[in-house]
Image (cartoon, rainbow, N blue to C red; front, side, top):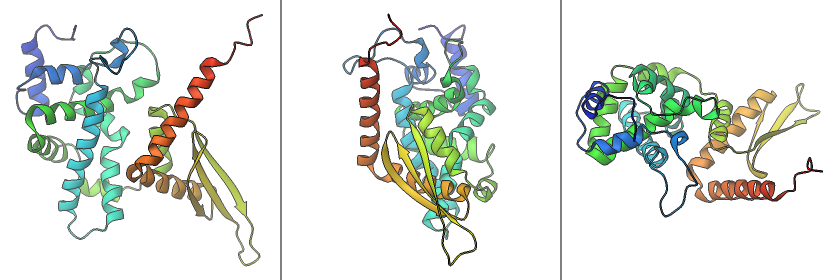
Length: 264
């Protein structure tokens, strides 16, 4: 595997500057820095690929647990909704992209330099994969120390983050784009003789499946509430997520089997 380093020692030194410790098993970190654009051939369940997508999956789960732990302890009397929103703002894609750049991780990513939708997520995905690598290499406590002392203490003001309003619609759009899902916001206006202003009802539809709805005095407000409820369902309802991805697979399979109408 070709890495953007002259030697493995150079990689270890670069990682030490980010992590505050030297890796035990460098192979985890090499994989965390390898983007899927370098893969050749199809992915199989038996062999897979040595890119960072599996570590990204693991790191996403570990990061949610770690940041949830930190937020829970920091805001001792806050309610569940506040804690969930604060955690979401810390681990959202834009935040992770920024962190990857600020710690210098983006310079270490091994990727083909070409245009594509993955580029907007490359840094954040690598950050999640890095967290997965730390977890496999050193365990939960090491990830906790990294997030507390290298990230939250130096790069994120948790009080300021908590005070910022979440754009739930943007977060849902970001999640759907990352997974290449078809997303719709279906909005209807409800007139009422008892109200001077109309109400708006919005239903989120993912891959043709009805998800959660939201109501507000403006389209924007109803979109935000529907997106917030849908994000909560995605986090808690595994059957919903499974159904969404199964619908995506059926859509893509149907598209692949359609004849090319441009061929005479």
